Image (cartoon, rainbow, N blue to C red; front, side, top):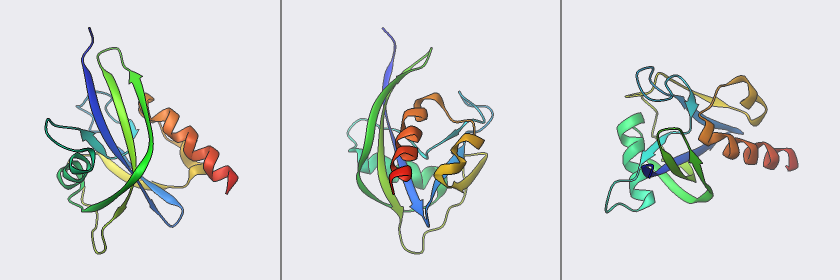
Length: 134
């Protein structure tokens, strides 16, 4: 049976754009873009895990709001249970890349210009559909 992991990710909006980060070259799915976040460790709630991951990866503090969506994606080596939460940077908190190759703020219309991790494709479709309605 393939290994399964719970992963939390932050959908952080600012002025109509959302935050994306580029994975380090040496990691699995290197140089693909993703939402910031990471694995949930034993004994952690999803919000605790997400806050810890954002501190470790971006040296920033966030407020975790509601669940945006959840999905399961099977990679050849791993099954990812992805939980994406709406989040916002805490007042005065800024991003410093501690792990990622790059970061950026993109509008829903720019999604097609970036190569994302396959697990994020469904999330991106939901973002595009919702932005088309508003």
